[in-house]
Image (cartoon, rainbow, N blue to C red; front, top):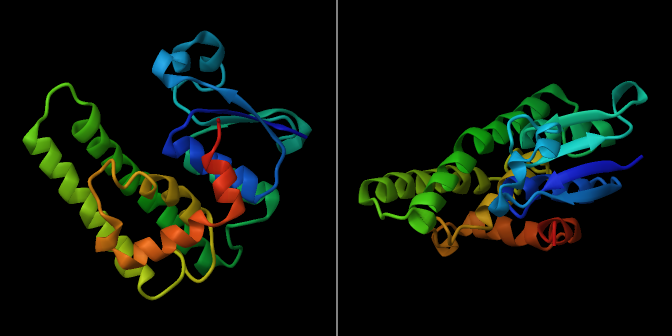
Length: 207
């Protein structure tokens, strides 16, 4: 059965499109143009009362009926469990993967998002904010750099939802003032993921 996927061209949306492609799950894209405030329309609020993308409606959800889910991290976990892919079942590996997923959710995403706002979109340049979020995102890159010095992927040797969650944010490194050449392990990881066919396809959604 098909998954209805509500999204726009943002890092959080692209986490889910990459995951859908990696798991080869059939889906239909519903564009929610956040530049036109589509996320506040009544029809979308019925899907996500928090007025954020991404969101999904799995027509064949638990118990066989439609199931609605929002919050990108929750969606990644759900799709992993539905497909049996990209989230280990062994307890130590599973919790390590979830740890790095939460690192993205609580750190990389919010800090990069603030950096994007103050460096690119704020009507007034606020030096304090630019310095604060610029320094913090580089600190987080440093954490990733050290993690990737000893292993191929964020949560261990295997590609996982932790990598999928993080990649679309690193894809906007120029937006938050980071040169990947300063972080060679991150650069190696980023280029390897970017060569995956499912990543290429997922990053092009919604088109």
